[in-house]
Length: 207
Picture 1 (cartoon, rainbow, N blue to C red):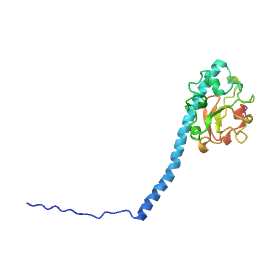
Picture 2: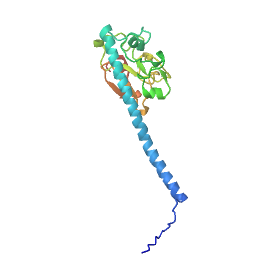
Picture 3: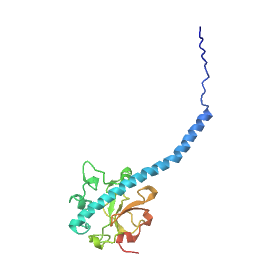
Picture 4: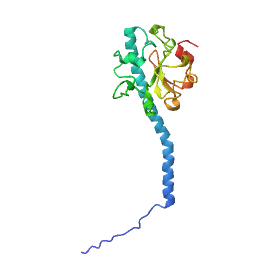
């Protein structure tokens, strides 16, 4: 018995220009909808790393205080050296002080913005803030560290510890519009919009 094979050739169908443009437009719309959410998720992840850094630095401060009985004074060259040089911090808190640079104690957003030096500012200058205070004399809700807003991370806050606006050293918003991470004396970290920082947070005096 002979079998005859029949092969059918169909016409290939191509996208028309209009259809192609519609597909591209849909992809562009989806990307525009998803990218902001993705960027926000990435920033939240960087903020979480920054929070972890601050909590680790707080442990280093507590080790220093346990031995020295007070917060590092302003007269020390920098607060980072007070911790690093005396062995209270296992990782340098200022990458500029080591070669090769070690950025593990730096805010990831600070690094992405190509800022150098310290990510964090210590609330002790001009005999204000927590300058050489005993731990039990410092109000728990007083700022210990906050995030730097200058290209080279200065060591200390500025202008008598006033809130942002007259406080040029503090970042206006390290983590986008979310604000800045603030480490308080009692060890907790809060993400606070810079405009919500108050004089009392830096002086330890209740409003």
